[in-house]
Length: 90
Image (cartoon, rainbow, N blue to C red; front, side, top):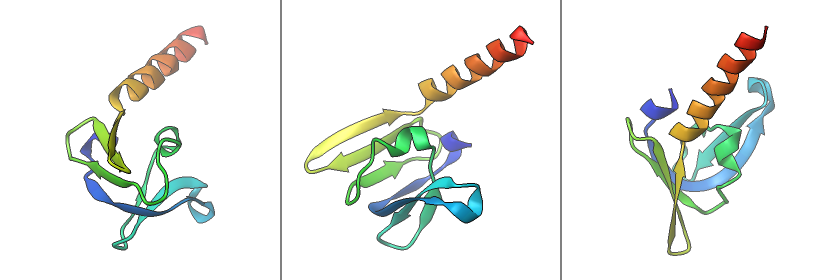
């Protein structure tokens, strides 16, 4: 699902939504709010501009003239591998 996400904007707020299973959320200055994996959230700061194109596996973070690429595909590949290993141990 994360690969299919499409969003962009300046981060106004990063928080956990207690009413939604404590999900990690990012609120943009233009008003949109998205859920974001907490593993990626730690690499973002208030006032960062972020961009994610549908079908792409990179979240681009723009901070004070720098661009930071967050690769999401390797994270999910590793999570799936761990899940398979845990199932095989049972």
